[in-house]
Length: 435
Image 1: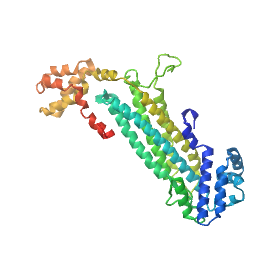
Image 2: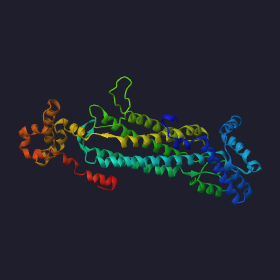
Image 3: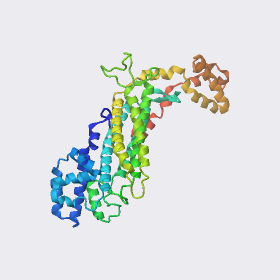
Image 4: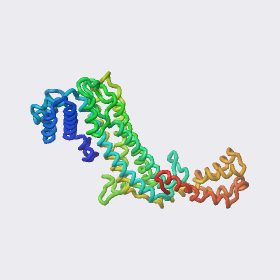
């Protein structure tokens, strides 16, 4: 985690203090369940809760113990025992370290998902607001980076809204999939602990029981979680790249807000660079990079090896912290985005009406000309615009082969840009449920 790209709410989820507090809660809930079914004295469970809840866990001391034991959970339990006293012997009865570690990790991933879902809600609000604002702001659509046919800036943002809405649904599913608890003992068979303890702890932590664990919770769940974060990051990059392209000087249809006192370059005082969206592209690359090691963690030896552990200590905090920062930054970019409809219209008209070529092509076919011949007629006039800057409509009117099938008035009617926007309401109704 790099402070420059971190928000404190997400960082706190992955702090040592939070982790040790969750470990304690898992152990204490397990003790309560054991007391209920007669595995340990009820007084012991009460004392574990009472003294443990008041404990101020000393991370430096736990780390010092771990340097001797070479085992993090044992180090924690040793430290916890200092607060609880004799009844600490009833802590961790029949449990294995992974019962604590895996259940804790899933609690953290669930909490992280909740923050990310809230981030996505804010982004969706920003996208919808700006989409409605620019619903009919006509602009040229581009394929291969080349002028194609008109769309609206609102439709561009509606597309992003729909994509992030899908991303939110995927994250909700990934959250549900990773929200499991395992308190099943050394090899997952409940040999020394009752399954009722697992069910109790799961309920207290808002998790489901893991149907069948080994020594660990199966890592396909985590692989799906991190893959989902990677897909969302890709959506972040897609929108960021769109803004970066639109901000290019030769285009300048939209640009990031440039605040008073902001500097774009140490050498060139005139610069207004798309630094936020460039940053988002880089952050998206990082989040995606965490998906592959999560998938490689699925293939563990037999009932468990430890190869996944070091990976998760890194990718858990880094992926969630980075995506959290990126989503909040992107929402801010959209909220403050400077949009220039007049420039959009100017760019739309730059090629002399070529964006209407398909209308003319289709009209010629309807008038009885073969598609191949229709294409050739339209293309030869379009090339005069590309190569010599001619006006497309003027050239079509001067082409006798074209006017033999389509009169001047009919051709002029095909150059009404409103034609391209007639189904914008339909698109918005599909995306937002309203026209």
